Length: 495
Image (tube, rainbow, N blue to C red; front, side):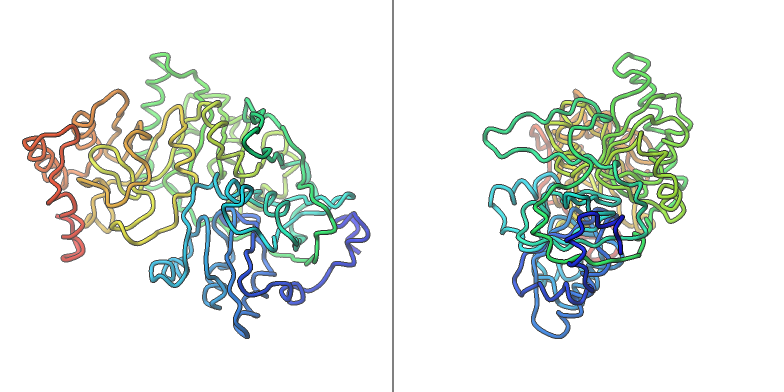
């Protein structure tokens, strides 16, 4: 039974229920689970673990690649099973526990988690729980729709639980490229010089004796909740398209641009969608996540190859890709996130990176994570990995939120995830600010002129002019810098 899915015969004796597998966990353990932006996450063992936690004291440190699907974070946190969480999440219930201080959250650059595990800076993984398409004749694990941190979790863990998901086609074998860097300080360069290159193996090689349990599942990934482009996101896409056309015209980019990276979310998805009708050709992607727009670009022929760590798709696109996975395998590869997000590779390939800002200030500093400087939203994710090392670092945002009560561009951001030094271009629905080669005072004027919603332009310009009278390389009025945020907290509107 399951001979095609578990090809090392002796491992078939490890098949058990999720409930039996959950008995392997102990209070205080560090657990690494597969899953990256709703893709390739485990479907059964986490629920059985939550059931145990409702019956007895059982709290774990939970590491993943990024966010989980199927409400797993919500179910685990409601069962009081999570003491510590890293490096990224998107669940509203977990977010509330983090902001209340009930769950300790480590917000990390996504390239860093396994580096810290490998060097002993984080507690070692006791159990890895990995979703798989199959286990090979040698006991290696074939991942599903994401790689994330799964490879290193499985390699470094003391025990491994494998969830074999029967909804994943066996043809997924060959989609992945698993390459694990050697230990520092004598690490060799990562030999990756183009997005389409493969440098590893199509499976995760581990000692099969570490596999303590195999659980059979048959459940799809959670569908993406990304919205279709609207007038504002389409306008953002249009401004960026016009800018890239100009870069080609003046000779700074070729018609195939540079490899593209796009963060997760509605705005980034819409920006990529806008490239379908662009004049650019033979585009390549080197990203951490591929959304519906990336598949549309592949299908249209506009993108010739895409490399990522995860594919996170709407239900119809997900079903289409799985049904035609053989057609995509020659144009698509999934890698560990420490490779997809590795600063060395990003800098070498010279990416154009497109990430979303929660808010930015008039000098180009970006807040990606904290509402009003205190309340965590989701996490920094991979945006810092890409922005710091990009050929061209772009941040996109709608200019206002809450029906205009909030301006996304403020005098000073309340939390800095990306400093002005890592930001080349800011785009809103109103326009684009090219900040390259500009001093802070110049940056402020172009951001206010091109990117700010008209109702906030006057107040921001007044703030900037008054700050300039006081002087400084980066003029500010510290007593007023956060007045907009304070006013919003008190009245419900920034101005």
